[in-house]
Image (cartoon, rainbow, N blue to C red; front, side, top):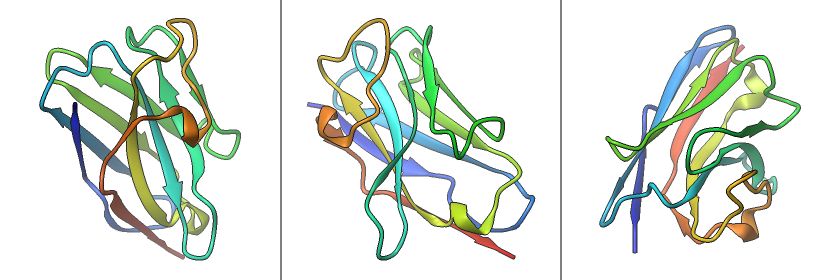
Length: 127
């Protein structure tokens, strides 16, 4: 089993940047595809970005393309989400998740594909 802990959230003005971190412990997360999801108040959890275990393939939601970047460091068991040009509509709790048996070719974009979840980190973007 792997434990996931997110950090790096906070309050930022529109147009600003934040970098989120997801630290894995318990066992290495190298075999897992990893993803970021977010949930705004009163809304469903939605996909943000995902990356395969090797880091060779990434997928981003249309709403964040060109602004967000997902990456991972398997030696440090850490997943990252670099968020630039933030908008008020990016305000949400951000969660990282691990997919135990995902494809090596592409990471999943549906929350039901993921097996382990962190507790989330709040991102608030003021206008």
